[in-house]
Structure formats: structure tokens, C-alpha cells
Image 1 (cartoon, one colour):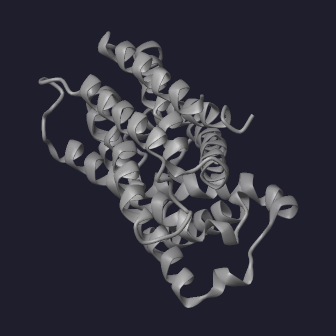
Image 2: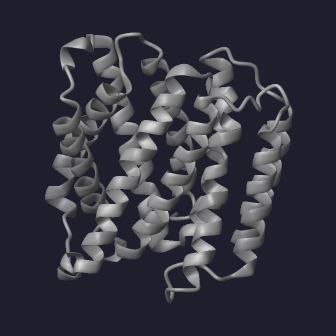
Length: 283
């Protein structure tokens, strides 16, 4: 069953990205306001869960682990602001060549970190090789000449993908001291609190429709991140990332049917390669 959970995460990734683009297209919704409201929604959905799934072991309070968690929060804030900035001013389809770099960043960073830690990151070539092949296929399927406009939004998406990847790989270093729910709660509440204190957002600018959509997005991200963390703990960082690579394919499908953005046939080829890579890694 655990092997199929990342597929749910991939679908959640696609849905969350599309909803974010829909909300951020509105003129009154700024990126700092959206970030604060989004993490408030995430915290609200996590509050009932922490009663049942709270876990924080004493090792979490070691100075080294507090520093790692602080870096996770910092990189998360930077990554989210960069991605929200790019989504507000550029089409989802045009940003995907930059966004799909995240899985490759995760795989490369996990391989690098594996040389400095013991047992936290996979060193199994049966998983690493298909994961790299799938990541490259995904990237090449999204690289089109007319999409590669290195404007500020595209560059922001590249750096946002890198900071998200760095945050995720760093998270694995301390994830054993938490449950996925408690880790995501502490992370999200810290981001919400810091964003609220720094940006002082005016929530009155959000109409009822946007508020409901932000709540829906928050629920989707809770599903996505809990699946990611659960996958990291049970099947590994690289294997989870491999399965989550279906996410960009779902994004293109949703962008085609919901946002009416044109979809290329090359994405279907990438999907076939990714599915084959996942099946090969599982058998």
C-alpha cells in the first residue's frame, strides 16, 4: 500500500499547483498575502491531527537538529515566495521546464548527502538509475524553444525548485525525531508566524471565493506533504521522488482541461518512461 501513496501525492501536487495559479492571477492577491493565508490554512487542517499523531523526540532539541530545522524553514519561505512570484505572472505550462528540475535536484542532493550520512538516503542503483532516467525524460519532455524564455519568473521558478529540493533533502536528516504530522505542523506554523510578523498581511483583501480556494489548497498540500514525509520514512527519498514525478504530468493534464493551456504529446512519452521506471524499481 505504501508504494501507491506517492501517486496520491502526485495528484495532490498537480491540483495544488493549478489552484495556486488560479488564486494568484487575481490582482488583489499579492504573494506575501497568499503565502501567509496558505500556511494559516495548512495549520488549521493540521491542528486536529496533531492530537492523534503528535511526536517529538528529545533528539529534535539538539543544537544541530534545531539548526537543520531552522534552515528547512528558511529555505521553505524562500522557495514558496519564488514559486508564488513566478506563478502570479507566468503560465503554468511555461514554468514547467523550471519546476520539473525539482525531482532531479532532490535526487542529486540525496546522492550527495548519502556520502555523509548512514542509511538515510538510498544507494541502490536499481532505484537511482531509473529515477535519474525518469527525471531526465521529464525535463526533456518539457524543454521547448518557445518556453525557454529566461525572464525573471522562469529564473525564480528554477531557484524555487532548488530551494524546495534542498529543504526536502535536509528534512530527512531530522524526520526520524517527528511524526510526519508533527514535523509538517511545526514547519508550517513557523512559516505562518514568521510571514505574518514580517509581511503584516491584510486578509480583508481576500474575497470569500479566494478564501475557500485557499482552504482547499491548504488541504491538498497537507495530503501532499504528509505523503512525501511518510514516503521518505518508509520507502526512501529517491524512490518517493521517482513516483512523485507523475505530478508534472498531472499538472499538464489539469492545465489543459482547467486553464485551457495547450498540452504537448511529448508529455505522454515522458509519462510512459516514468511509469516504466517506477514499475522497474518496484519489481
